[in-house]
Image (cartoon, rainbow, N blue to C red; front, side):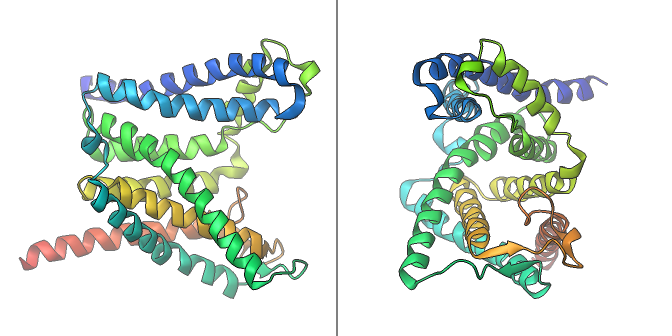
Length: 297
């Protein structure tokens, strides 16, 4: 009983931190929007401010939990860059088969309305890779860094992986698409949007995508906990996944009339049951291989 309460308590601590960060962002966004007007959408100010506050929260959390850079997951610089390249390779190996299947099943169809040249494709490849690296450099230290490390010190590692994966998935859906003009924003507007954002996490039409992103989080959590100081691997793998998804969305359209459309979710037309099943299979294969390897030796 006490162990269960302990798990629940530590599982909810990140939610409290997230709630405080969003509340502060709602207040900050009010003053920013009143100062700059409609230059940047109100919701985007809240979203980006929350991300910045969560990233900044890593440093006091490290001090509070006595976690150093290596324990957070960062290896030495040469090892980190080696891991980054290995992670890019891992990301390519694990997600490229999905895109091949989506193309074969005609779920992804080439967008013939766009005109591409070699220069444009190379430019797009470089830009999306840079963007993907920035995204993964923000998300991985947060989810597979401080969150997973902190939880692992208080509860079993397997539970810590699952809980951090749930938070990772949830944050992708914590959004509110209501557009509000600057003149209509008042002090409590952000808090009203917050209610809708939390409700959107439980949107039933996004359930398969939620499970898929949760499986992504579990996969990366396993990578992080199976290899010491392996945040570079997670960053590289995550970046390669984001890179492939962004390039796919640039080059292909989702064929909503495909007989196999149920294999992808509504979030981005890529993550869904197919990704969930594939990553689950990869996880099982890894643990079977590890067990057999131990038996041999």
